[in-house]
Image (cartoon, one colour):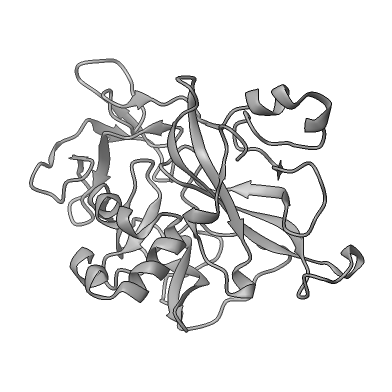
Length: 304
């Protein structure tokens, strides 16, 4: 997959934009994923490639399909074709299902993978042929698989309990899993330093903020409201929110149209040695042909 994307720069750019990363991060990003097969029909957002852009496709992947997952257990790519995957976008009303349906398909049994609150070092997987559990270290493809704790309990996502011989009871995550501190969006220190001139600026120094405003005003595209984050805590967090835009930059604010924006928080590190934080944030309007562009990001630590 990495070789193919390196040989096709336009597709690499679209692939990276869908995942919320820069093109030069593709190799490291894919190298950090772990292959496995789905046990349940799973809702995702798949992506095609149209006119040089990655177009989002709400989709249900059939149980048994192979995917690459990140260290939080979230599917990030299909092994069959390499298409980028992101978490599903919430739908309102009753969804309509189109396309071929397999014999066991039922909307009531399709699941959504919930991002782990901890970084996963070892996955506990199930052999679909034997029903036996085994352990797979992150970033490996099977050569380092080992026996896993014996799992008992209901066959339902998220409730199976595994008994480890060396301890009493654990969850399906192994004892070596380490707890991760939820990162902030930059720092609020620069906002506080502005005093009253910082009124209206929001979202900085918060965990998964529901709103971001870097300028304190309501100019088109200068803020995002009602953000729903899908993978806060991973190397790049992506969200969907609402903002407004005008087709003509000289048009009055009253002509602005509200639309969905994609928000990307990235460059996970810290601000001036503080707690974990995303140091950069940006957002764009996919329906206007815009894509993820790190060069247009706001420094979430300084506001610049």
